[in-house]
Figure 1 (tube, rainbow, N blue to C red):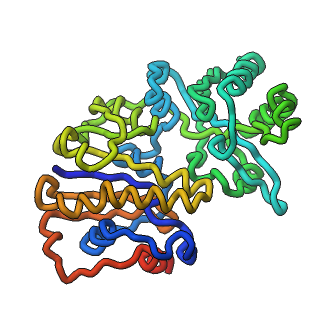
Figure 2: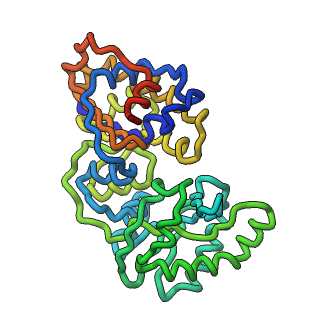
Figure 3: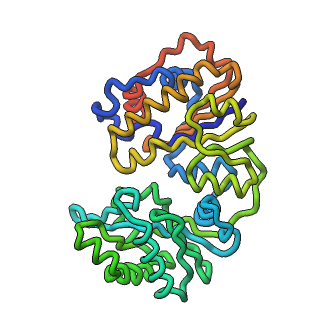
Length: 338
């Protein structure tokens, strides 16, 4: 079995954070990283790395993610992700919070989307697949290049907003004014909750033609991963609990997307990151140490992080590198940050 693991935010992004990285027990991962060959590429959002696994450059994330939601509407038309966000001023900067950073009820999302469809029917049609993930099908396709939501969530966006010569930027200003007066936002503000005062438009395009399958199966809970699998005609399974489940049913070349750490980093939950990291080491990395050279003969560990797009490769022969001592994850983080 050649096992490919995609683990966004594998290493905590603040190397000097001893509260998070100090005394972090990771015997399994330390053993693997000590013996792996590392290829370090420039930093890229995990969405881009995931699409690259399927041979897609400049991937149309909108229709692909919508397809992963189970909607065949994604197979026709020009779709964008139109995710609800809250923009706030902080120290003379604009900070973007996506809907994962605050509570948004399904009824609130549906009410706003219905109002947007009534007001902007000449531009396109909105669709809320969930309270957090919205989409826009444009009546007339336009190129609107923008970073994926994971690259801007929790970060300043002054440059993107001010310098925007993007085709939909002026229309988005109208959307923001419309959202400001929407009854849902009036109620949210009265209750001290963040208003849905903008949308993050990204990943526009049409569904690409099916690619040759690179994997025997995809195991993931992310809609984008599900959409990529559906578009490529690859069997899709839920994210497994541990390595044993994959070995039992994953085929010869499965792709496993372990995204537990992603939200922890985006929303600065260091304690949650430590807990999820410990489970990953116990359920995946430590068992891989035993499985390498047996039922697993090759491991590709892809880790999009603040330190870059990290790619670790191991083959069965690497298990015999007994002279390779593992480094603490805190030490690896400091080396990568230099």
